[in-house]
Image 1 (cartoon, helix red, strand yellow):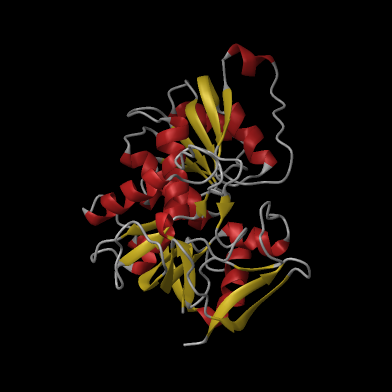
Image 2 (cartoon, rainbow, N blue to C red):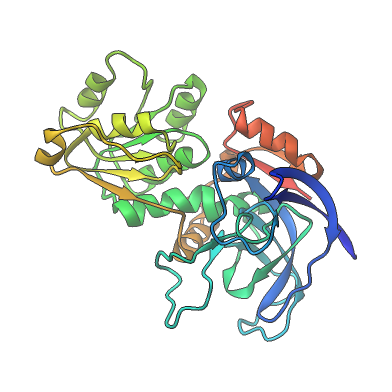
Length: 348
């Protein structure tokens, strides 16, 4: 076992290819993981198309992929947790630099590095992970479902539970019901939000949102869109609007749909400037805008527990399984929404 396949992105030439590379060797505090499943995320697409630029890259070439699950294959030296070979795990999507004194990893960090963007991720047969980024998973949680928890599920979970703090009976709107937005709908329902309004231009996405627990599914281009939101919320407007698309027009529409004290939660990533053109009513109604990025270690652990006990079934989120060698095809399918996928899974 000297070489393996890996999906490699060359930062200088902006070229992506599945290549044969050396199997990495775990250093102090690290563990080699045999990858069993890796999710294909829109952030991966944004990396490859150049709209997402690594801030803390440690090399000019990176193995893509931050949604990973597998089995511990080899233990590096100087480990502290007592993890053993054969343990089933999922990997947190990011890690701090570890250089700050008194670092609290559950809090936002300006030095947070993301797997598959700033350092090698899991679109590979094997990947190295720092031991403190590993979350053991139970035998009844399939690898493909476990792989998507650290981002596709953890990101909206933290947005709903931590950033927004949604309480039962509060109204929620979700713009963009793709890989993250579909889970945002499910998790809003899990915490008791009501009503839940899903907003997406694709009829198939709106149908999926209803199946995932939305009370209403609206077309953002409808002439009477604002009237439909008012009717669904008994004239009060939304308590929370989640932008899972990262599109300026979405943010404008979502902000306008907020009611008294309502908050716009920016979940979707966009390099474009944030603009809110609404005037005095934004101030008068005490509206807010809150940024959000990723999940937390606690959210991953909590979601694994919820899945283990049957409170959250992620099987409907898995659209297809694709061999690692065909990673470029998976990227194309997600980028062009072929088949309207929630999550495509690469299998080494």
